[in-house]
Image (cartoon, rainbow, N blue to C red):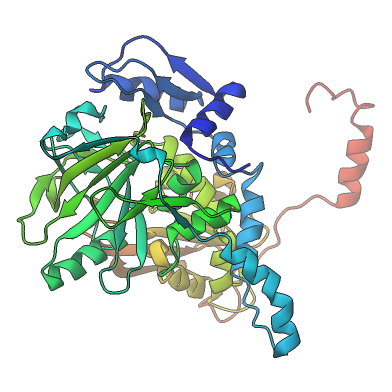
Length: 486
């Protein structure tokens, strides 16, 4: 089912016993993080902190912190359902002739129904606060970790527009709260928000933007999705939920925002203003990202629903809530990866790799150096360019099983022959790289080697029991008295 808003999602979580209300007072400074970190690592429920010291807004956290809750947020029982729909979306079929075009019309009409609609009013503007009345300290923004540079809004959906094309972007960029009406805007150089900012800077114009907290869960996920260039996240959210989302024009800016959102911060970034130091911040890598200079966001208005709910997340050493968001992306975007790299059967972004440090890839290998071809294709594929380590295995290896992958690395790899090191862009948060956003990456070919791939000795067959014997043993398991073993 598609949820109309965050509150309907919360109600469904509670009805299924997947949400815990915490009535005791808690501090937004470190205490919520410590509680949530323990609950997340124990595979616990979503949490709704009803009394946050010094604030009058409840805090929702860990809402997406399990595969089950993430699937519910996307309105499916299994990520494979959305993956199949994405496969149809990217299917490269071009209708030939008039009759074929007519047959395609129903599908095209359905696609049009996924586009967002702009409505006149939205509950996100039930309360409007402007000018000197704006006070970001009313928000229960968290100090997540002891070394953080301050309080952070950790899960804001940042709505911007390209000043030249009008294209919309929705990104997830953390915001350090500086004072009552300014924050940092941590968009990294590789992201679309930073690209829009660069265009406003060249034009010498202020950049309007809106930061949304607590949207329909599908919209929140869409903001994190690694979409192809030019695809509108608002359209993608409508596609995932099977119906276009409702947007409403901002109260003080010409930016549309989700009509059912809990909280909207409206304002601008001025490219002529000096950058300001932001950070450190305890990040999803498990380490602090270092302080650096970023643009300043000036909040000119806050709009919100009556009795708003503040949705946030914490990041840090995995597993965390974003781990499950990443798993959803991995599963749902497999069809898109296979569109560009057809020999890929499956891939895995293992939890320990924090999204960009490691990728396991399973391929149907047919010719020499095909594994290397796949590595370079992945490094040229959107945000997968950040992949620091790629391990390629054969089609009979389960890449969701880390031990199976590492077994084949140990068995099939000669270090000199089967590794490749390249230079290129890396994640800005990678503290091991010699330069910010640039460094080296490694590919490991753990496939069986073919003639033509260097010096290849006779390759042995793997040890596999015959199917006949396996079936016979299964049939005799009770007779052997081994039922209590498995």
